Length: 355
Image (spheres, rainbow, N blue to C red):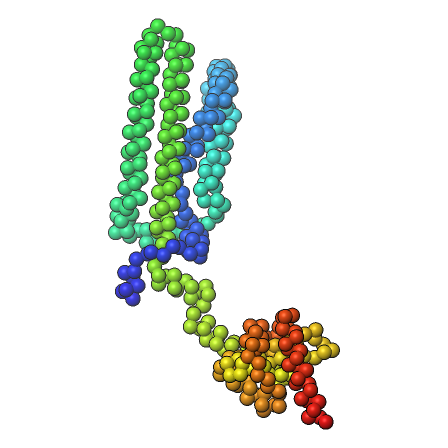
């Protein structure tokens, strides 16, 4: 038992193990891919939707202020006011919210496909174990997540810094520019920074997804003993299967031996091979192999043939060729002539005995 526990997980996971992990919700998935797709999709949408957004927002605010000046301030007027504000904001931002929802679902589907499981939601008391919790906190994954988060902050800061430095002269020239021009410049700078962040997050997401796949594959690795146990569960105990096959072979041999007395002739090697043939002109197009055997089985076939007066003919070349034919199959066409000569000889012997 101790040896089994110390075995290293060196075997690739089987399909059954992969399926079990998937049913538990343990799949390779990167949140960075979700973030990259979400930010990129919203940025692309914003580049087209921004004029409509600002126009609708301006119209909503203008209508809101006009309406506020006409409504009496009371407890009863607050409820319709809140409904108006929420519905107005929803009408403006719903394309962004819907796009975010679709992209979130799409990012999950591209990584893990269709997966519905409630097992991750089931309570697990082992998660309350402080020792295991500490182990998770100092695991490779936790270290990677911390390093990744710290690295993202630094990289985004560097991107923003170099973008601003590259346009520093334009920034210094805003002193005499009207407010709309300043806002337009700042919006353009922010958009450029966001585009660079999207590219950065896409790269981080790719690296993180590859790391997640590697980590999950390592987690699903199996020991040699686990593979053996799974094979026993799925395919059955090898020793038991061997016994079953032995019983089946024994039964097949018995049935085969029961057919030997029905043969018209036994063709032998003379000692290594024995093949029993049967030929009924009215029912068969060609002779069939009823039984065959080598060494001990060949000797047993000859003994049964002797007990039931079945003719035995020694013809080593024909016996070796017929031994390759499956039991119950008809002899090949190139053997017709040789077998016909043997059958003719056997029939002539029988006719001679009858006379």
